[in-house]
Length: 108
Image (cartoon, rainbow, N blue to C red; front, side, top):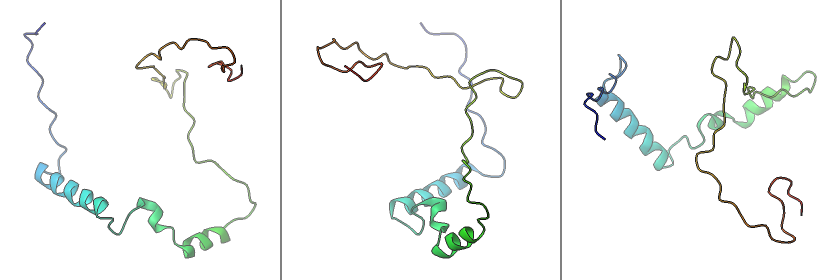
């Protein structure tokens, strides 16, 4: 059923980068990636043996620290919209076969 409401216009590009400049930048970066240009691994290309050795020289206690951020799943003052997981397509039910693994436990 069609609505009589007008379709909203696309948002304007941010100031400082015209559409033509953005398209040019996009093409150059895309071509670099496609051609296997000087950077193939992004920031990992900056990890030279010398930089790894210099970083290892900074180690003092050997304790490892994860840079991963926790995923907030409960609403709170600093997380008004916590992460949620939603199935987008239900998994079809599989018939149970004798000796097959249970999907929930992974055991027969």
